[in-house]
Length: 161
Image (cartoon, rainbow, N blue to C red; front, side):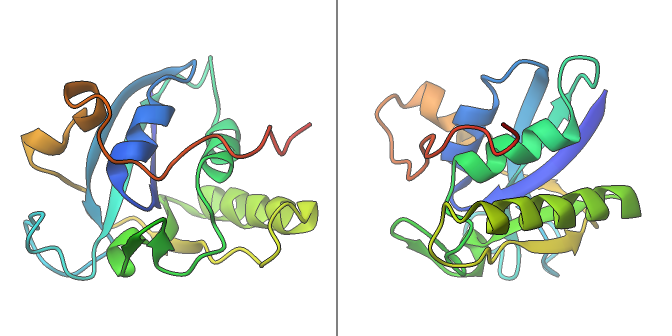
């Protein structure tokens, strides 16, 4: 089992679309990338709302999950997805090692070269320090609250075709 941590706006919508993918074993929404210890929804300054994804590398890959990530949010808006604004809603790949960082850089280049978005990618590459799970009521939120708010959708087909 491997893990990847991605941020692309409100964590509810990301989690909902990612969890349905082949090879994804578990998703946890939470906070990362900031300095506040033990952040909460009301006190997570500097942290991004993110999803920790556990996956079976025999059924999917880091690259395939990056491909999906760039299909389901707008990576060109700085600190914003839909109506959500601020650094909590930034687009970021939190890498655990240099290989993951290189894969992230390569995928950002793929997305920019595709010209699917009129603006360049604003997604940041940030070292993963500590991931803090969000409060229980945020976990699986859109399953618990069908019709709840999301600004995520599948905007494009795979970048790898």
